[in-house]
Image (cartoon, rainbow, N blue to C red):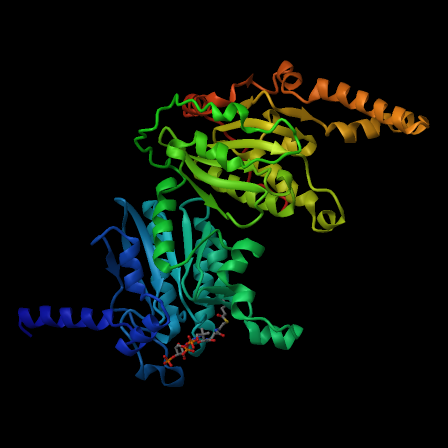
Length: 519
Ligand code: HXC
């Protein structure tokens, strides 16, 4: 064969590979409102940056006549490229080839990019759109999944892993995304469950639709499995690029420091009066975040799940920072099982990837009751305490208003190695609120007063006494548990200066095989 013919053969083979399972199946993918695997990668990465690997790989299965049907690339597109100039490794399952089902060779392709990402120290982004294990391959397909899962586990905390769900992701296949750091879903065509509606019907007799069982809305609001959702694939791909901008390439690096045009000493007078005088009145914690972060920008993680706590990425003078904040607008910002788990996972992600943590506290306590106790609030709350206590990244805490009891301790208090703990003048730091405390301390005396008016007067007097003592930040500041009481309007500047001085912080935990976080 002449050189020119050889080049032509290559070009032809590439064209054939790019067709995946064929034009008809590509059209059918488009008709469902879905992009093809290659279109998704092109939209995710910087223009022209994608380097495809293993385009000529084919499956080796000879069961059920499979030797007669094979496609170049075998159901997954893999390679590397850049997002804002930074390297990422990607794989995108190609539904046009055997429904994107996972074969032995497909697993090898995915494992190859995961191994390269680990060697280079770069994030892995996986786009899932698959009918699960390739049925014709039996145990080979299962082994293929297991190879991926093991790599997900070993890569956890070393390189960021992000999973996008752009189609079916069912059965054991859900466990690869579940092992990664972030899951993103689209509002249509995207579903995740361990068994589909038919099996559910036969086992539990429940009638449930695909969306009710595992759609983006369910996983964003109820299960918390999805960290982000978007209306379209394009929205989710854009969201992925934004997320990548906040996180480092690996656990040995820091997130990119961006040039900020927002003055570090920008004062916001509104903050001085933002918190209502009545401690039982809510306000929106996001107003505070918007006020203090660079240009008011932040990226919220799990925005619809456990809304009584906010987890988000923001920047302070260009430095990426994870913010955990109680949200008084929902359930008065109380800590419950879901909020504790959500925040604990976020704290651990930030700590694993050298992202400093800002905690904004306004928490009345843990949610009491049988519902929470039966659900194991003890261990879930302990997860959050554990996550904060083991975190070695710079930790700055600002107590905005309430900080009571166990919840005060859990929310990055000084003794959990909080580096700089500030409080607004509105802060209330105590074992419990005034009415609860008076009930416990004065119960017998109160019961002994027969006259109702006198009883009410006595309670008020005792509550006022308690509030005067504890409904302020100065009792804690007098002990050094609060490093300074700050003027609310100056919060942005104080946070920036705190993180800048803490940038060289060095802290290591005792050597151990691994910890035993209360799972
Ligand atoms: C081989 C598969 C396949 C699979 C789909 N296809 N799933 N081929 N193995 N697992 C093929 C179909 O035969 C079809 O081929 C093409 O992909 C498109 O599938 P359709 O059914 O036409 O598409 P659609 O109607 O959109 O339905 C998609 C689907 C459905 C809901 C995903 O295909 C389906 O239910 N698939 C099986 C799902 C499943 O039970 N998987 C195993 C789960 S257990 P043609 O040639 O017609 O285009 C599992 C264990 C993992 O995954 C364990 C890990 C530990």
